[in-house]
Length: 206
Image (cartoon, rainbow, N blue to C red):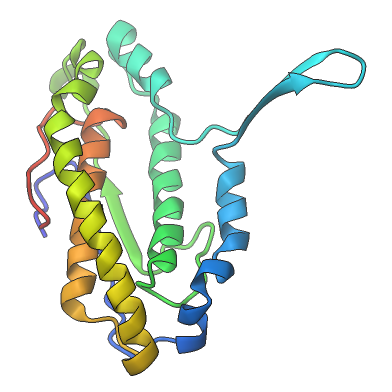
């Protein structure tokens, strides 16, 4: 794995028999932890019974706040950075569980089999003040490539589901491809939305 980029990501390969029953019902088993994850990204606006308005938001990935701070103050508050990193780690544990890359239930706080590291940016020296306004646009070529890669990864997961049911194992080649697509997408997220680096993401699964 290329360690030079601001975001590095790896998933421990389960070199053992996976639980076939859990894998068979994974779509249903993941629902409780998806609900928990959903509470971190949910937003609700409405009116109470007495006509008073209310607004509720749980956060999700912080993008606009860091963008404005970099643009006007050349700062990236550390606790915002920590929130984004830990939120991604949790979301990835849920996602990798859902796509059968492990059969342990995802933890809300333990690292488990997912290893995600993001370098805290030196905003003054390494980030351009106006770059957050255009990174999402500059990343458009990656969006097109990732669209086809995620379609391929979807079929890989289906193939892996059958392989686990019949053999108990997740084929290593399929596992590495799915992890590579995740890694590619995460580096685009780090560049265009987390805003932690101005280095253009590599077109690579490694």
